[in-house]
Length: 98
Image 1 (cartoon, one colour):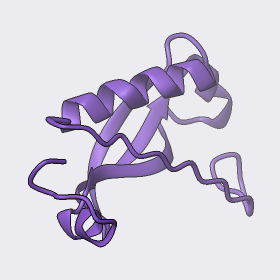
Image 2 (image 1 turned 180 degrees about the vertical axis):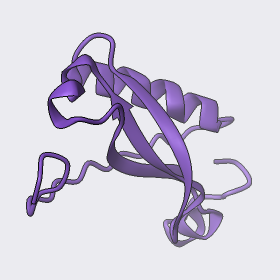
Image 3 (image 1 turned 60 degrees about the vertical axis):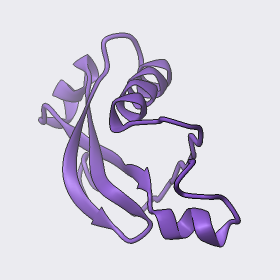
């Protein structure tokens, strides 16, 4: 165990479901959320990844001034993506609309 890895696990999940939502909207929402959670000047980036319920899928990293204490410019904080159409179908939503 070190400053960037821990036995603790926290997970945040949120769905932004609306017409004409894009990855750009997702990125803007996560930028706002993580800056509110972690402080002014926090930045996020996406890295391609695979999650079975989203397509495309991304790992989310953040960078903040207090990360110098852990010796890294970026730390992974979560995953995200656009909801897979089959998930919408399973929930009774039309994936052609949402």
